[in-house]
Image 1 (spheres, one colour):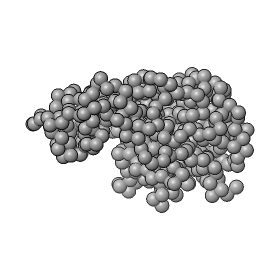
Image 2 (cartoon, one colour):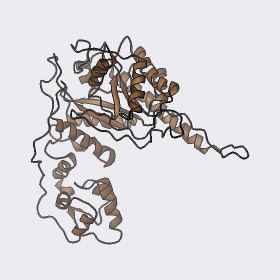
Image 3 (cartoon, one colour):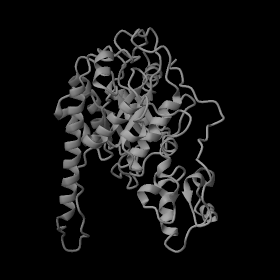
Image 4 (cartoon, helix red, strand yellow):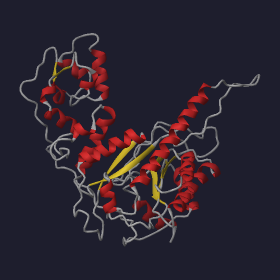
Amino acid sequence: MDLNSKLAILADAAKYDASCASSGGVKRNSVDGRGVGSNEGMGICHSYAPDGRCISLLKILLTNFCQYDCLYCVNRVTSNVPRARFSIEEVVHLTLDFYRRNCIEGLFLSSGIIRSADYTMEQVVEVARCLREDHDFRGYIHLKTIPDASPELLQRAGRYADRLSINIELPTEEGLAALAPEKDSAAIKRSMARLRVHIDDAKAEAADHARQPVASLAGVAPTRAKPRSFAAAGQSTQMIVGADAASDAAILSTSSQLYGGYRLKRVYYSAFSPIPDASSSLPLKAPPLVREHRLYQADWLMRFYGFHAGEIAGAGDGMLSLDVDPKHAWALAHPERFPVDLNTAPREMLLRVPGLGVKAVDRVLLARRGRRLRADDLKRLHVTMRRVLPFVVLADHRPRGAAVASVPAKALPAQAALF
């Protein structure tokens, strides 16, 4: 099979792997004329193909052969799809070639599991090693790690990659046991814990290194050697939504545990897509794509707005509303907390007002130091008045009656088909 045919198969097989955030990496570049590529440390601006595929990274599988039979996966061993496998040299060649032609800014590499977890992980790590050491590649590298791989291989992966990720796969252990019985939930979390220890150790080593005095020779500008980094952009994971009966409350609870226990940078939510010759255990239809969107909004509330998982989707059936965003839905469900006085309320409460983001809250706090805010001031603070006014009190404004939900008039988006 020629290289283009392999690329068509293995890029398509990887298109539902989420890897959109890339910030936090160690800054590298080749402006001194050495090496290939750059990683500016400010994140990569991604573009998306019409089918949702991210095209700023070369996102491919090393192979879509896999010995596991996860029912929700199109690459499972019993799936009747075309198979292909890259060699290490082919992945390295493609990465460098696409980068030099300004088509990509880095590499996202995952793989089906062949022979064993360690054998597969060795191949993935060797690609990153070859790029970094043999070709001095300074672009972004995201490696999807194999949960059952040995700790030594995970440690080696972190030396070469900007970000590592391990798929948690499903929100609950029961769901994983039912749909992916060969996957071990405990092994996945052990690997996450090991990565967290390595990342924390690297940060502590860097902090100690920064406190050491710099030794220099006469006539030579003092410089400090850079400590070795380990997955400086952190670790992330991906969870399939809608393949089992887990509620949004269960999904957010699992995400909260992952953020707290393993300090993940991101949890990605991937709406389940029906696959050919699917098991009868799987739903016949994909969940509405807006459910995935609502989970990302709720995830954002947990990470930046001080919400707890249990209060976002804890009532009723544990599902997020598809009609209004989670923050607006929470405000409508708690009328006793509103209206909020924008001139006196603490920051924690301002962050819970629909229509006020983190930056808007900071602008409000700064502006009210000098004067009591009025309705017209919100325009100057670039606040969406239509969303905010029903929930706030100002010097010249008090809302009348209860706030109402703003139901979108346009049709809800639908999940794209896998084929």
